Image (cartoon, rainbow, N blue to C red):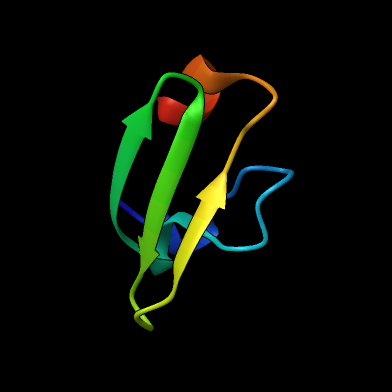
Length: 50
């Protein structure tokens, strides 16, 4: 799968930059490949998760 071009409009990083994530209700904790941890709350949790 080509994740370099998969993006979510409100997130500044493409899917290829995410190394891991956790979900708590409607809140995502994303671990980026550069070691940075970010918190993200999408406007549509299910679409972002998919």
